[in-house]
Length: 178
Image 1 (cartoon, rainbow, N blue to C red):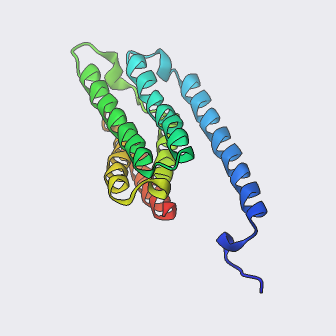
Image 2 (cartoon, rainbow, N blue to C red; image 1 turned 135 degrees about the horizontal axis):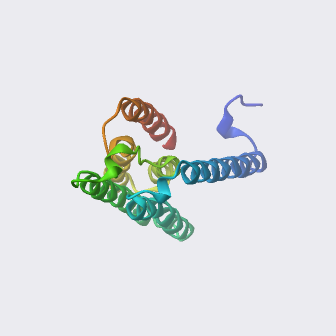
């Protein structure tokens, strides 16, 4: 009997859809990184923090791939928590640099679309493949990192609107992860 549910198709179809999804997410991350580069985020006074912060999801995704391959759900959750804490630490560092007297960084919307997209991917993978209790804590850290990223340097109207959309994206994706 044919089932109308998405998850009950053949494994061949699921693998094909997964590959298409990976390509689309990869393309979105590359486009977001290019947009950040074009806007000059990587040439501002916050460049060291932005670069370090953008490494957080990349490192977490690499660690998750190894841990998932080895069947270690606690390691997957730990990698997600590490990415969230790392990003929040970089956000705090950006705030300190932007508030220094004479800093022009306070006038820039220094958030990266790449990091937002990548952290949402890390959140989905953490909720989906991480051990339940550690993944719950990691999900909180990752959610805070995504939602607070747009207002890391300065609270602006545009930053608050983006933070609102990030909140919706975080909870929609976290709900789909499990």
